[in-house]
Length: 487
Image 1 (cartoon, helix red, strand yellow):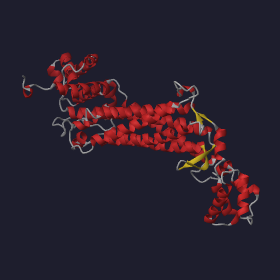
Image 2 (tube, rainbow, N blue to C red; image 1 turned 120 degrees about the horizontal axis):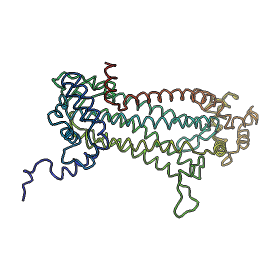
Image 3 (cartoon, helix red, strand yellow; image 1 turned 45 degrees about the vertical axis):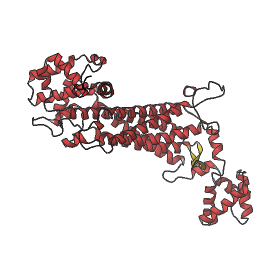
Image 4 (tube, rainbow, N blue to C red; image 1 turned 45 degrees about the horizontal axis):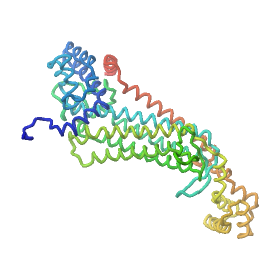
C-alpha cells in the first residue's frame, strides 16, 4: 500500500475538491483580466528598461498568439490558471523569456488585481441595472402624479397619497443605491499591482503606469494592505445587500397589489403563468422570481461577509479562489432581479379607478377632517383628533362621507363647519392637493421632485458611461499611448 505522505502535490482529493473547481471558476470569471494584467505589466517592465525592447515585443507577441481554447480541456495538471497560461507562454516563446514577465510581481498582487477588475465590472453592471429600473419608475411616476391611492402604515390603510408620490419614494432609495454603488466603485477601482507578495519589489517598477493601463483610478497604496485588505469586497457586498433589501420591499408591495383582493396592478401575459389544474389562475410569477432572486443576492452578500469575518489580516485563501465565485454569484443574482423587475414595471397595468375608490374608503381622509377642525373651529389637535375618532366609532362600517358628517354634527351640534366643508375635507383628491409641504404628495410638489430626480438620473448615467469607457479592455498599444499621455 502506497504511503500517502510520500505522494506528491497535489493529492487527488485536493485536485477534486479545490484545484479543479477553482480552475473552472477562474477560467470563467478571471482569465480575460489575467491577460490584461500580463499585457500591462509587460508594458511597464519595458518602459522601465527592466525588459529590453526585443523582450517586450516577444512577450506581447506570445501573449497575442495564445490559444486559450486549450483551457477547455481542464487544468492539464497545472495548479491554477496562472500557471496554465505561463505554460502556454513558455511553449510560445521559451521558458527564459516567459519567466521574465514575472519579474517584480507575485500571484498575490495579480490575484487581488483581477478580483478588483472583475468586481468593478460587475459593480457597473449592477449600477446600469439600478439606473434602468429607476428610469423606468421615473417614467411611470410622470404618468401617475395625480393617481390617488391609499398609503399604508403597519400594513393597514392609512391616508391617501398618489402613485407618483409612492414611486418617487422608491426612486429615492434607488438613487441612494446608485450612490452606494458609486462609492464602492471608487474604492474598488484602485490597483494593487506592484505590491508583489506583500512588500513591493527592489526593481524600479512604475505602479502608477500599470494602474493607468488597466483603467484604475489610483493605487491601493500600502503594499501590505493591497494584498491583505478585503474591505473592497465587503463594502461592495454591503452595497448590494442594501439594494436587495430595498428591492425586496418594493417587490413585496407589487405582489400584494397584484392579488385579486387588492387588484391595484395587473401584469401582462408575458409575466404570468397559468395553473396546471385551475383554468382561471394568473400567477404573477415574474414578481415572485424577482423577490427570491433579490433574497438570494442578499444571502450571497451576507455569505461574503461571513467568509471574510475573523480571518487573518494577510494573504489568505479565505479571500481568494473559493470566495470570489460567491461574489460573482451575488452580482449575477442581483442583476437578474433588477432586470426582471424593470421589465415588469415597463409594462405593468395600473387600475386608477380601483386605486381612487380604495383611497376614498376606510376613513383614510379623516386626518384632514381633524386638521380642518383645528383651522376652522380653533380646537387643539388632540381634541379634534378625539372628536373625529368618536365620529368614526359612531359610523361603524359605514365610511360614507355624508354618514361621517352626520355623526360629527350629532356629536358636536355647535360646530360651525358646513356640510360642504366637511365633505371637502373628506375628499381624497383635496387631501392630496393641499399637502404642499416639501416631500408631500401634492402634484405640484411631486412634479418638481420628479424634475430633480431626472437630473440626478442623468448625472448617474453619465458617470456610468465614463467609468464604463475607463475600464473597457483596449488594444495594448492604445492603452500604452493613453497611459503615456496621462503620465
